Length: 150
Image (cartoon, rainbow, N blue to C red):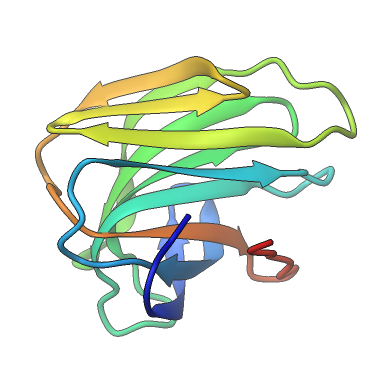
């Protein structure tokens, strides 16, 4: 991922409190955001896209779409807003995960189409027009912040 500028924000997403590390440009529209993640026993991996606002920061939900993945492979796609602490679930799915392995999470935005992939296999799909552009981000649980950009 190539991006200029970055910021960090703590936010409420569909799966609970997350620290979101944000990069990019609020004018970005159609793109892919992906990350290789290793999910510990009780943690959740998060990829975020089309972040148009982070509200007041700490404890505020961003205007964004987010994909979460649990250690069991349960995946969900959410739309969150700064005006509510409750995210809207747009889709759910299941990925097949090998225990103790790294997995690639990817969100693909094309117009109003949003797809979520794990290890190259599509597990989520939704159509939504709430957010048409915005930054990208990666999320980590607040209690355990380990995020690498290498």
